[in-house]
Length: 190
Length: 229
Ligand SMILES: [Zn+2]
Image 1 (cartoon, each protein chain N blue to C red):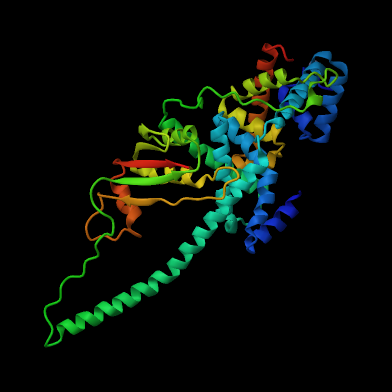
Image 2: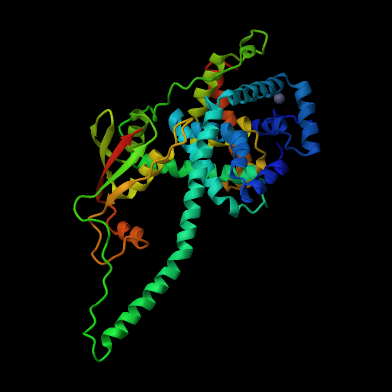
């Protein structure tokens, strides 16, 4: 669904067809979830955050100015919500009932064909290590690699979403990738 | 052709296609002749493929999630419409009240009337211990997790409910997170009942000055009882 069709859905929602918003949720839920999960590393919390982000987006929908893409606007809400969520959690760390600090056991559901040996040997185990190393990077690098290399945002969109300069985006991507590559090489993946 | 090895940043840019044509040409020339840089370039490519493999991480039951989120949105919208309605209605109600009071005042000041009493608004909320009752649509584990996240101290857990003491400033968050999160596949929604705030000053109406009043003594705790659905 292109941004044009996002806008069509939004027009319907604003005209009173609230249920049309489910198209937006369906389209973006996994992307928001993945980002949230990379920030809190806990399945349940990431799920809660994802839901809150859609609620906030719905609430603020009338203020969406259509100067930027809808996805960029939604991701800005997502980034800010996660930032505040983490701030609150870090300020008031609780005795871990869930393993929110050390990561949880959320597994990667890989389609069967990925496990076939002829498939460039990116196995579930490989991805598990990649996930571990990516999430172990400093926050700035991890965040930008999730947006760029997993979610495929353009440099310009990343700059808008994170509210940083384009040159800063480039530098962070370089440094993040370089560090991750070094760590993956140490784990024998490269 | 670039004589020195190509910097990592340029190889990364080449993968993303964010290079001007001249730089791209010279980097490609170098890669054709330098085994080391070519290997580095290919390794970056492999790393990017592995990273894109993490797109497989997704919500376990996506359709349920969409349904549950939409239910919450519909509930919030209903609430918002109701609030907007009251917002429209309150000024006219207040105006009517003022007219009525002025009328009474004038009547009392009339030669045959008695001396006017000051008009006081009394809080409809009772005094005593502060407590709030919330219905949670989550199971016990997640409800406790919400409480902990919001700095609450769990004091009692039973099969039917959980009691905790929470900083007053987090009570709204707890309520929103617990009751608003409709369980997957469920349409139900429970509203909070019986929030009594003993810290309220006499003569102050519970709304709309309520929030400002509360922020003044935000370090107090409130007893919260969460009923599990
Ligand atoms: Zn070279």
